[in-house]
Length: 76
Image 1 (cartoon, one colour):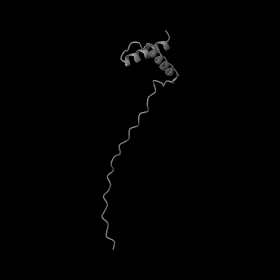
Image 2: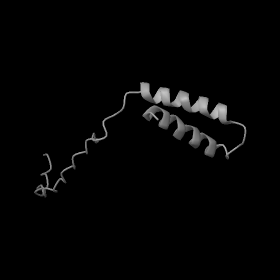
Image 3: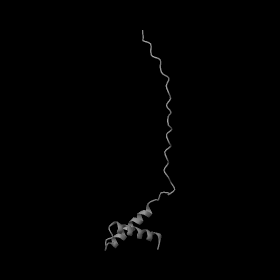
Image 4: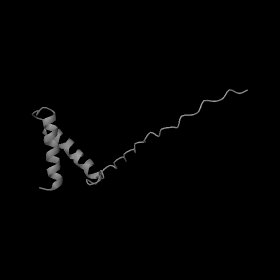
């Protein structure tokens, strides 16, 4: 049995289970499974080792104490 045949079988079983294991729907399940397997084979797969880039931590800003200002002299 080829890998594709195994995949179709897996899909058909999953479809059958998801529908509550009805009787008399085998042909429909197999056809749906075959189409899913074909679509899966045509879809380019993403590398499994790829990971999202982690955001760099934002450096905490240290509060710089401001020197108190001298009061203004009244304009005169």
